Image (tube, rainbow, N blue to C red; front, side):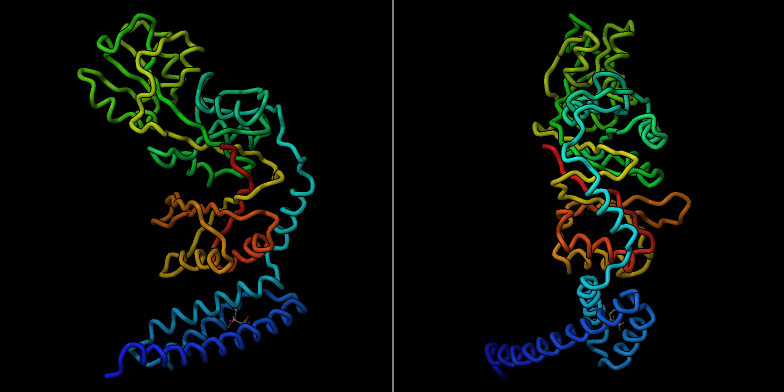
Amino acid sequence: MADLSQIRERIDAVDSQLLDLFSQRMALTDEVAAYKAGRGLPVLDRARERAKIAEVSEAAPEGVRDYAVVLFNLLMEVSRANQSAYVSGNADLVEAIERARRDTPDLFPRTAFVACQGVEGAYSQLAADKLFKHADLSFFSTFEGVFKAVDQGFCQYGVLPFENSTAGTVNQVYDLMGAYDFHIVRTVRLKVDHNLLAKPGCTLEAVTDIYSHQQAIDQCADFLASLEGVTVHMVENTAVAAKMVADGDNPGAAALGSRSAAEVYGLETVRRAVQDLGGNYTRFACISKNLEIYPGADRTSLSAVVANRPGSLYKVLARFYSLDINLVKLESRPLPDRDFDYLFYFDVDCPVAAPEFTRLVGSLDDVCEEFRYLGSYSEEV
Ligand SMILES: O=C(O)C(=O)C[C@]1(C(=O)O)C=C[C@@H](O)C=C1
């Protein structure tokens, strides 16, 4: 039997032929691209791809049939990525993005009408204060209220939490993203300390009821489990919880919330930073109805529905890979009224000025059933 180095030499010889053939194939796809660009034809030709895969599947020896199909799908994938440099699809979107880059001012607004969920003292308010120097805030009791306020032009911007480093994704916000038209114009990361807040004079031992938002309750699970004889109540927002404690007449009531909520509602901090993990961060998105792309935007959010069959999500991921674009977040939410079809959310790292960005947005239609561009932005940390 040949030893490993001899087998590898033969593999190297085959690889060198493969590389040569691959380069020839890619050069031919350049010719196809020039042909298509001249005639306004799309890069993707599903019928040709289907026929090619059927032919490969027929011709391949049985032992490598499935692998050959994967390989030829990948070859056509990189061929399409290559062609997208010459033939940009989705011209309207590419143009809208270029227009937004031209028309958006250099500086993020210092002041604006901003919608937040909750009441004064909510973490969304702290996020808005970090984003804008002087935000003119309107509070809405639900996340949907924030989306509506932006959609109907009542507020220019809305600030919404979408991810926490301990409790994970805010599903409610992601589900509303699928239902409203909006753009993400910036994100902000906020260190969140949950404090146990109660009326002046109340001690930890005297606490009987704790109110807070589900996410804060999740993030303080260990602390809450360590307390005996305390009932935990879920309310729509941490600041709402603080207000309830302040306005109510239960001397054993306490809230998990921010120090600014304590200040706003005249409460005292019974225990500081009671979240399970010291480094607890929440990310907030600043949304607007108009597409605004500020200088320095290096992250993009997209959503897509892909076919419910093998390989369809892989094809989207392969598109990122073939353009050397890093995927930083992937989220999936079931689509309402569909039998477990999913809406996928992708956040990718890619400066909006990079040529591969235009190639990406110009070519994603090929690999998705539906695709939405949610915006390009930078994150304030
Ligand atoms: O034949 C074409 O039209 C091509 O663009 C080439 C090619 C391929 O790589 O084989 C790539 C993309 C099309 O979807 C179909 C086939």
